[in-house]
Image (cartoon, rainbow, N blue to C red):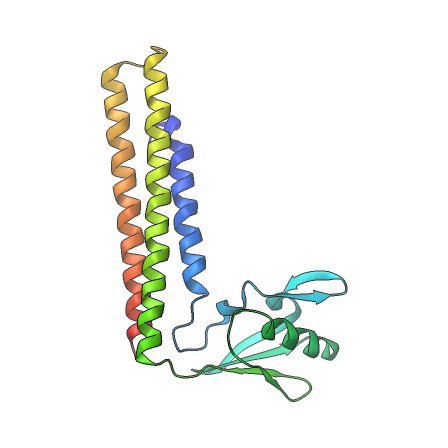
Length: 184
């Protein structure tokens, strides 16, 4: 790959990574510790991810178990989960917090798939915007007469191939997540 295109490739890769982390937080009827990724708990004045202050396990397919390293954190973690968009009410026995994931209805599954597809479309738009930026930068090089028109054409083709590859990745990621959600 041409060094001048490296930065655009990295931006497209970050777009894919961002999409994957967003999709990981969407729950598919099974317990997934990643639904807690965005939740922060006040730990001695510092907002910290739950995974840094507790042990998160999946003892059953539809249950998450959170065992704080300090018993005093149980209330803080519970409060953080309640104020988040997870949509599950935690239960605790004073030491361990449990999240029971309800079975998703067919309608809710379809809504989640729509949401996944929308996130996929947003990622595609981001990749296409990066392609446009790359092509604009190449045209500027051409105007400055730093590179021949043939070389610009080759670079534009390379940008298009790169874009097509990432769009394909986005489609397969969205397809995989949609299938995961629709599987009962």
